[in-house]
Image: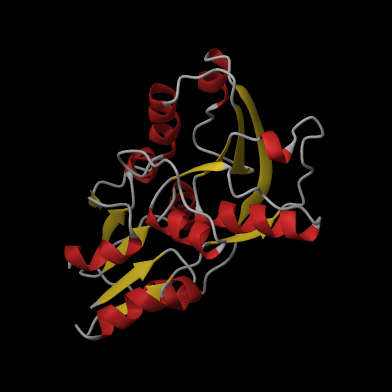
Length: 232
């Protein structure tokens, strides 16, 4: 059987290796590509006095630190960092930093809502390293708590075409794992409604499936691409 995953081949080596032992083919479906944005650091924020940086994706981690490298800045090691999910945490570790806060589940909304309950102090300077398009904006919540909140838009996801032949190989008994709402929109735009069984990496992705009236889906218990083999 085949499991299509809406990520690039380079992001799926571990999963493909584990799947091959079970004679399962992993099919990359990179419907979106990530482009870094050369953001400007807010002039009135001293890196040494920054309290927290928030990341909701591994892409955000890479884009943020690459930009700091390019402009000759370095995030102090004492800076607190909040992340969503194992892959975001892993990307942070490759940069030599550890996460100080994670939500109970890997969802961006929970990251911020649980953070303000756990850390109600008002004299904090927070920066969110985010995508150009986001599914939920934390600004109203954080500003209502009188927090000094800023954001840097450091990357964007841009739709990319996928070979029709790749999709036609995915049959009714196969699986497609969608890893973001944008992937659902891009697939629907290019190919319409899928025939295969569907998996959503989280509830925001599932909500996008609902908007397209896709009913044959399951939400992963863990928002981790590598857990997809549990659903075969």
